[in-house]
Image (cartoon, rainbow, N blue to C red):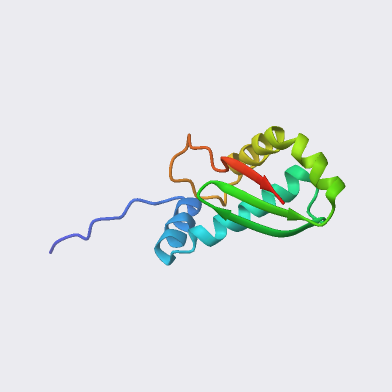
Length: 108
């Protein structure tokens, strides 16, 4: 009689990430996490009317020219805050741990 080999136990967080990858849900979830990080970092979530992310560029449309002007002056700080929030986010699935997620912020 042969014994069935035991599988090694995996942490639940790793199983969740594997499920998301297998289901091909990571890109949509990552995009939503980026938008949530933008709202948290900028504080301008209520003025933001459109969000779009592609190829490391975060496109943000705000409905106030005053808010857009203030955000433009803080662009570098906001990029650092968004990337720091995403680095701490357990739901964000990274390809490379050292990669900068949002490389450019474009305000409209």
